[in-house]
Image 1 (cartoon, helix red, strand yellow):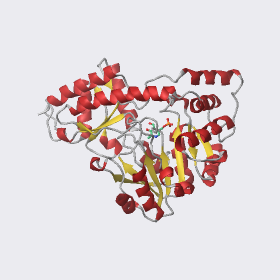
Image 2: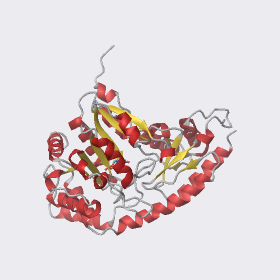
Image 3: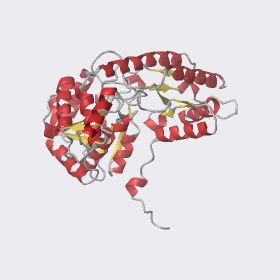
Image 4: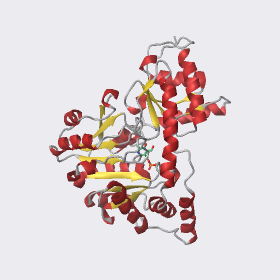
Length: 402
Ligand code: PLP
């Protein structure tokens, strides 16, 4: 047999399931089917005008060259100010590095720290990319199922049980994709008490959805509850979700200097600095008028409330109210074991997702992709009309099950 030209660490990973689900929906649409796409995980708003204008102004003043690897002084200062103002966290500019989206920040952080066989604790349900990023860095994802009965959150006892001498990272994403669950200050404190007994464990907080909150509460931060973890915590964030800037590709990391310096070294030999124009736009986003954030969150909240009511009215489905982010993680246990009009059994969430797509053209992502079944994720980053249409179709499809 010819040896593969592709390295084992890449053969180990799979393409993003949400991208595959979106591709399948688009293919059916090309074939002329009417499709309600509830897969996409990005804001459906345009980037606010003042941010786009800052990008245009940057181009006009010639900010089109290489920047410092870690990011422009203007942007890193805006990040330092943001962390102090919004999160009450104090960082120096040399503890910050700008990356091509939070995605690249997380992957690069694994690359600079994982030796083959090192473990990363990933509470499930998780963002689909985490386990594959760990695998692509020769690490071992240790997924810990956090059931709905505990609010989809990791308990201190589960954390204690998951830690081994090989544990390198604990990964926390709050509010979470896909469940929207957010940790409280007290919950963070309890996790920190466990971490105090295991000083070799680093912590990564993926804060990308911090501003998309529905209860008017600011999102708690691990480092506010446990400032003593600062020297072993990487704070990851970005502008994609808060400012509808997914295409601009700006994320960032704040953390201890040795980790940030290692990231700087790796990125300087791989991607180089992030787009200079996007950096100017991101600086304007973080430093400028914040009105868009509250306005978009109010719209997401209306959609959440409406969709949640419609989903919970469908016999066989139920959904816990998410604290934040823009997804519903729908429990479909009540459909498992039933039979479609064509005589196929719904044995798992993937079968239901396929049936919803084929029978009514509704595209959602199966819970298997997020590490906890039987569920499916639907995105509310789309109009109320589309959400209502999607729920009506789901109700019809599910009522036809026997
Ligand atoms: N982290 C989570 C939990 C996400 O859901 C996403 C995007 O879907 C990202 C990070 C990536 O964000 P970015 O666009 O900054 O790479």
